[in-house]
Length: 110
Image (cartoon, rainbow, N blue to C red; front, side, top):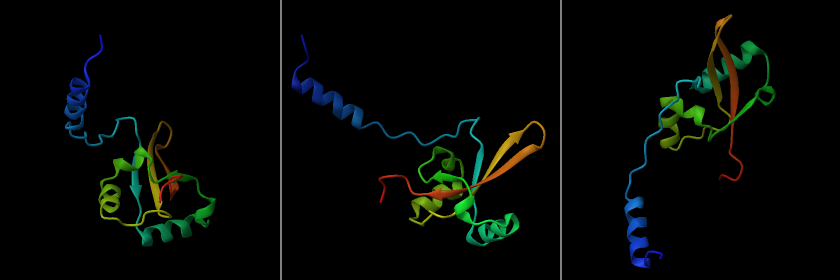
């Protein structure tokens, strides 16, 4: 026998009242760091390349949420598409490997 409609609606209301859990970075996720405009220009000059030639990262990528400045800028409504991201990965040979990515909009987002 299935529950009545009133029982189902009470269950949905109770589930909706649960607050969203804040994002917690996984210990295996590498550290991401969104660069300022000035620092982005300096890095592009050092690499002597154009941003179009760098790998891309979606603005909705969970790895970006590991950077508190990214979260603060996103919540403030700042435009982050086109910015550079420095990714710090542990390396057995180099100690730390640094990679750069360009933030691109998520498909279907405004």
